[in-house]
View 1 (cartoon, helix red, strand yellow):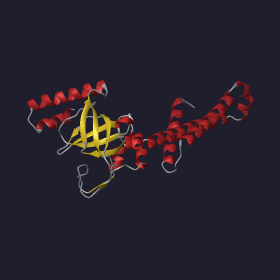
View 2: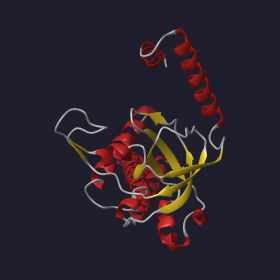
View 3: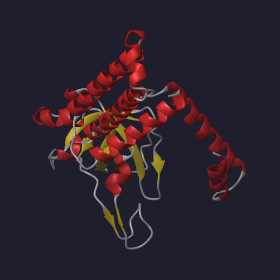
Length: 254
């Protein structure tokens, strides 16, 4: 079997493993079990193809191909199960009871803040340092470390990508949206907002917390320069073309 067909078999196994794991709660150990099976079949394939078993190979021409395909399928299914479990493990925050009291934590802004009409949306990643959270919330601190949080804040003060900030406020799980909202303007809908945020590994929200700047330039140097270039371009564009035409032009160009 050539490389292209082998990759196709692995991809088929990957999607199969992901599909099965979405209905049956498998785990990392089951993925390891599948990898072990793939190793057994691959060793059987090598033995089948070896010169010392040439007589056996003549008696079973299709055995080698069967062993190889089985090994590739088990590898693909194992990778699919493993990928699903890795993704699912990031969502453990959903099974934890979120306290309704205010907590304090450090976070780094990992995306360019998005200004809406009445508020600014900020995506920040909570710091690994559990000491940055109130001592009485130690257990909760361990749960939210390295988690992303979507913050709704006022327009001022303004923050930028890479800013390390101190946040004091309440955290909550995203809820499904119904009716006309800031995120859904199509009328009477029941938009799955938590699922939409989950694609970006965001499982927490905070509405209008207290935010203080700690330090700047804590993100990627390249992304920081690209955002700075973009903002400079938009500002120069606004000097030449009046609003709202400048915003439309910036949106089309960028």
